[in-house]
Image (cartoon, rainbow, N blue to C red; front, side, top):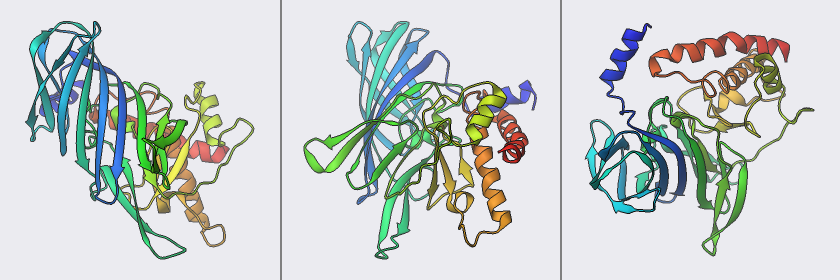
Length: 330
């Protein structure tokens, strides 16, 4: 597509203005799987580039309240929230004009862990040892469903870093894009834990991911400490893989084949898991191709990202081109 069509698409979807730019999100999420709800809070570091009295960002299917804004000089004011359900946005209005500079916007919110396999949604599986149905929760944010999980600038060219914290039942595994920084009992409650993760590289909101559930794992390393495909890509592109882990996780309920979340790639079970005894050669080859494709996106798409969704074909084209080379070489 040419640049003219790309601009028409942006106008059609009414992109957010570039007068306010997020640089960092400090996000905390607490899922309640017994009720299929979650609550959270997010502190967003902003750069205001033009004077304004309001902040517009995406949020849908969320109840957002308690908007507070703090300036670099620690001046604080409370904002009033207006909802635009059709546009999937909220506007936070302030009495005092925001002059150019750095700010921190604090928002609290609640939402539903939905059953539609988008945003922050619920998964279920049957335990092999007891036939009990067990629930978990996972994310799927591409292309524009991060706004269902927390208020954000949910467009691919608004990149920022993320500090993610999950408050979860102690018996469930909490996973996100980055390695775990700390894990402790939450609020003196022996049934809950709080898991904090390392800060992400700068990235788009659609690549944020977190999973909560009853998961087992296997760990595979080579001499470089990672799987074979990643060193191949790092050498081929002459760019290091920027994250200390590359989790591949099979999700019981998943709408597509796979999703290249940075550091936490999610898959439909049939796209990742094989039976060593019974899986055919075709099945093994297909799984290898899918994994190589998603890991290619760690560079094509995650590190280098299209400006708008009309150029998504470039991400997919590059990944499809190199997936076969990677499987052949590895």
